[in-house]
Image (cartoon, rainbow, N blue to C red; front, side, top):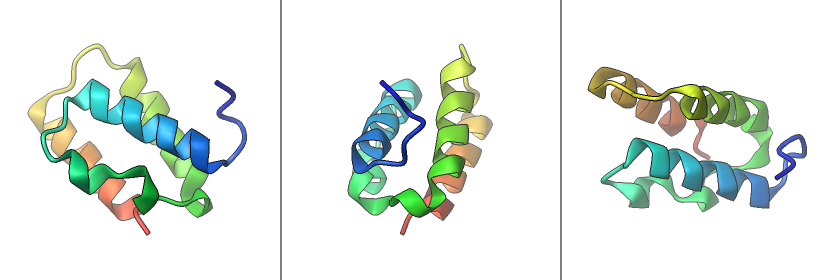
Length: 73
């Protein structure tokens, strides 16, 4: 997948992968429709950071969820 282009499909892909990696319980709050391409670079950064990690602590998960919340429309 070419994530260099700020498309709705790429946003959806990254959100889905982040939800899978974090095993988020409240997935309704993380709908791809809630994100747009205006903050695409920030979302790519979050996606890459999450995907690099083998494990994520509960505190880190909380911080990631808060940051993703700030990226929502």
